[in-house]
Length: 187
Image 1 (cartoon, one colour):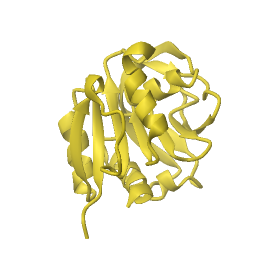
Image 2 (spheres, one colour; image 1 turned 135 degrees about the vertical axis):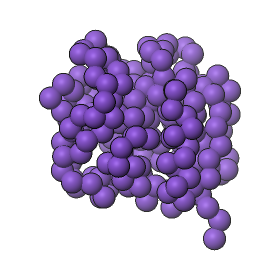
Image 3 (tube, rainbow, N blue to C red; image 1 turned 30 degrees about the vertical axis):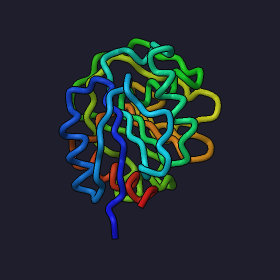
């Protein structure tokens, strides 16, 4: 049986190598493209899309329009990680605000009934490296994880196809297990 293929969109993350390695450890082949070069369609080539973190360009809706168009056109699961989640939220009308700088492991409470969290406990420790926060889920989405500093640590579209994580899931064991839950959605 062929391994599923995941298109990883590099939005300027410093941890692209680690993100791809995690997805490959979980049984997927990965291809990478930068945000400025995304294809207009995936045409059955990929079983999922993963949007990496970014360096504070999430507000630039014009720059990310080809990417958000691809996400909306695709009929595969999508996971935005850190800045990737922020890009998706801003394109749906969400607003980001400045907050405390968090670097390192932080606890997040997750909604265990969500398939994304099949392999983790109700409180996870995930890696953060940011100062921007989504305070409220935009229309068409809901928060499925929260913490002391952020009411939207994890995000899910109403149809369940688009997911987001404020944290960098490529680090720490809980992050890996959340990615395992995502992989179950496209295998």
